Length: 196
Image (cartoon, rainbow, N blue to C red):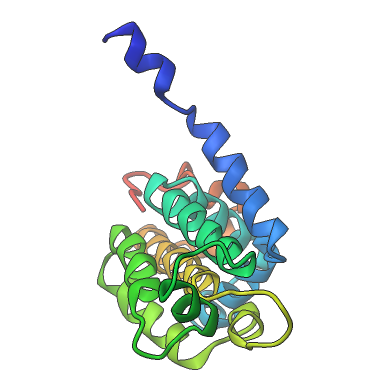
């Protein structure tokens, strides 16, 4: 490896911390997203706790595709708030124009890592706007969340998909979430052969 190449790379933990900080700066916590995951997955998972869902959200936020999508989307939202985008993009993003689909495209692209269940769950959340997603989608005040509402849905959909796949791993060993601690949700250390 060329020494110049290694100097230009950003360490994974730096990007992870920046992603969490960006979400927090915009008023979105891991707990906010985990509560959506919990609401969606509780009926199907014996012993599932909010803490299991928080661990799943943290795992999703460690994926580079998700980190990059969140950082880009939040940056565009913040630039729109400062009126720093060029026209007509400024007005399109600021008003979250109905035919502007780039926000959903970026969010959907980051969901693909978690399979078709994550894609369909994203569609459900995009339509039904549960929890923090609904708050972000409300066009009130000076803040712009054109990208962030979809990105929050993307993280929730991906984390819920991880839980669903993890459930299958547990079932194959006659176990439930009641049998594992939140820390064992990810990485999957309790179930032999677990890959979710």
